[in-house]
Image 1 (tube, rainbow, N blue to C red):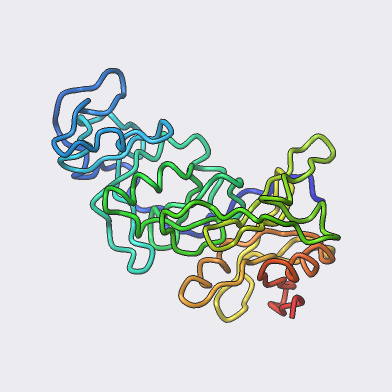
Image 2 (cartoon, rainbow, N blue to C red):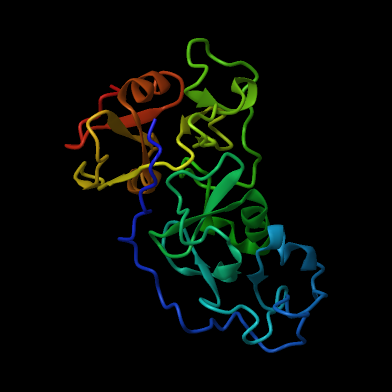
Length: 269
């Protein structure tokens, strides 16, 4: 297990950070930094502030100009085309926006596209709200499979012999060591079992052809990538996480994984 934090990948385009989106419109202020309107013309106001993260869409979720400082409330992106969705996110409301992109989201989190390649960890409630507001195509589960608004699957049984490496459902939580709380990553509506990584994980990234963008930095780890069919496998490869070699190969027998060495060879086969 690694217990040093490596910064998240920054090769993704960040988009326009300063300008407010047209989704952020004039309207009655909802208190200091609050949602611009406390009521919705379509009865969806409860969806506009999931888990304390404000969304913006007209007319359902209007925000007063300047209500979302910093990056503003800008459109989420379609996961396949990269086109802007009609519902935006107040990105500065996400406490881990800078530090936790979608390589190792925590077990109860999913991912939202800020651009065609930039994925950010958010609580499930955020993607649930985006889905119900018509922007479900902006989201992915933690394994990078398409978000369907179905709950994360629960495994009723846990395969023996993997008690500290896998997690979820009957497998329980990961065991923290060395003062770090390990996290369970990669579960989805179709993947009930996740894998355990350090609470402060090392990250890795590969191109579709197997070329390393950022391989694991040490000789004892493989880049664990959740195995998916095209085109979703592209995003899984961009957002991998380093785990011990033996653990990765063993985990791949339980939940479909690639275990990539620095040269892109899959050792889970």
